[in-house]
Image (cartoon, rainbow over all chains, first blue to last red; front, side, top):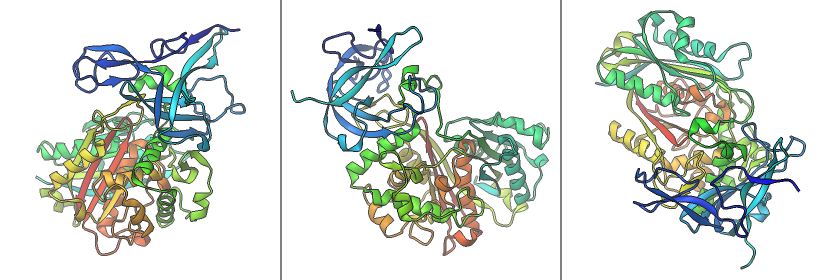
Length: 143
Length: 380
């Protein structure tokens, strides 16, 4: 099996048996952000801390990306193998709505307000054979 | 001091394969100068911009090296609005009496492909396919429909009206009216938005000759007056394009604040506007912008569209030339095309698409990445 590495450090805790999205919270006004920001966009404070935003949330809005984006999109796909993907904003218990790819890719599978869970999934394999992992959401399994 | 618009020029939007974007900008300037009966050498200043077609001040190579002050403006989709605002301020300040505003562009086919770094974002955001304007407008429209009871019927009617208006506009790129069913059955691009509900990147140029209103009658018998020009950016809490996350708290969109500022400057309200241009990147945004600009309440659009209120003969004619949907979007020129069309309507020169009853007050609104809005109010 190929080596798996995060597409970008600092977006989620991984590897982990229960990965969490990472963000930041302002020590002054308590607003949260994703990805983690050194400066607070709400009050301008420079005093922010990295926090876990959670691994479950509620779907706030969604769409389906039906055509393969031009660069800077960088996947292993070709126009022939491109598979449409869902995109949504998920309301996280950490207090912020996070934009993410969704595993579901047909309208019948998606509904505003549905519970979602975080998955860390392979996105592409780079020239060294390393699998780049990214964050994604799917319909939450019943707890 | 008031600011007058005494000349308007357009280089037809769409595709001009034999011309560079810059040449299309020069073509628009020449048309605006001819309309005003002035020459390039009369211009004391210029503001202009484009996204993909080069530095606007290189237009002097086409138009003449007269030594005028020429400032390049690049402000995303509000480039035209920002150029006009700069010219408005230059006249208001008393520094200049007469100048030109120009926007032009020439984009390759297909959706825009912005680079994350240029917008203060990390590469992964673009690499994983989250940084598309089409996607954002679909996401915002989807939520708006959910919150305000808007149905697909409204989305279809916006496009139907846009292409009907385009068919009456000799300078429009898309001049073929589309039926309700053709739009309703077109391919789904980004749910809930279909193929014929999106505008396309395009080419074109637009220019305006701006003048101190006290001197306008020296040049022109029918000046129009730019009563307000306002540009605003996003607040913390507004839902904007290119946002890896959004706050839970809700703030007014930049369109709301730009619109309020413009109405305040002009000393009038939305009920006084006779003809308007609202940014219609897609049919969902036109619907949202109707309310964000104060022309109706959120949710009322469904009924207004069903009743034809936004058509040329309706109570609130929107995008009489077919808007971005029928003209495409050359980013640098698009905001000035809106002003051009409102001027045509206020002069009563709209021909087959002329709004009846001698419209007196026009309104233009541009919106775009990364959450910026520009509003102008123009009167006779």
